Amino acid sequence: MIQFEIDPYGLNRAQLWLATVTNQMPFVTSRALTATVKSIHKDMRRMLPTVVHRPTRWTYRGLLVRYATRNDLTAAVGFNYGDGMFFEFTGGVPAGRYMDVLAAGGERRAKSTEAKLRQAGRIQPDQFLTPGGYGIGRPNAFGNIPGPKYVQLLSQMRAGFDIGYTSNAPRGGGSRGRSAAKRRQVDLLLRRSRRGSSVVQRTGRRPKGGTGKGSGKPGRPQTKGYQRDLKPAFWIVDTPQYQVQFPLRQIAQRQFNAEIGEHFNAALQQAIASRGRG
Image (cartoon, rainbow, N blue to C red):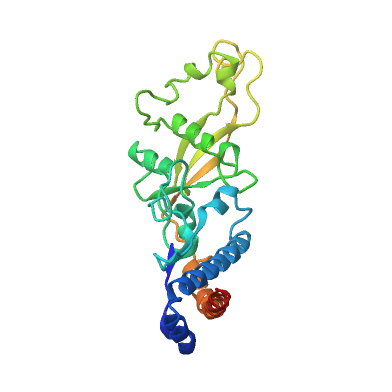
């Protein structure tokens, strides 16, 4: 969140004097601040698609603005971080938590999925996930992995720490091979190698015919029903570093400095005109 207030040194002294002697300073200041942050908010929304591929409505809604009043001569614009600065936040992930890395760069915070995988010992404390592009790791049209896919990942990795019940997939190969429905479910494995670690998903054709022990035919028993190939659903990477792509604070401050004088003058003229009619 970027908070603004009037800096008298950046305004015309004659205008400040006139607003003061006419007792219109609170009205003029609140109107000027509100008009300026409204303009900043509008332009930031317009810029979002240039830094985020197809931003969702949730991201747009997360870019908030707070107007000034006569009793509170401050205004603010920025993303919601769920910290109560704009309003009490409930449900979902506040947009500021994932947009902050674009605004400030550096390391991003661990997602709840990554935190649970770390807690379960599936990944290291300094490791993160990035989409591998296959299966449940394939981003949707907005470039995001839907929440239910992460639930599947945690279940298969036996890292679902839910309160009061467990959502972890059952252990054992046979548990997935008892029925066609079990054989069709997503099957994920953790694979580590010298070239890197990943969560892979089974793909490809399934065994045909009576293969396996005692059948005289080599291969995996048909009753297992596992697909033959493996493709990366998620890559496990070390702490990623991000470049600043959307420097919100600098953009907002520059626009505020450029527009506040004009909006202050417009509000002052409106106040004088209203007083004259009174």
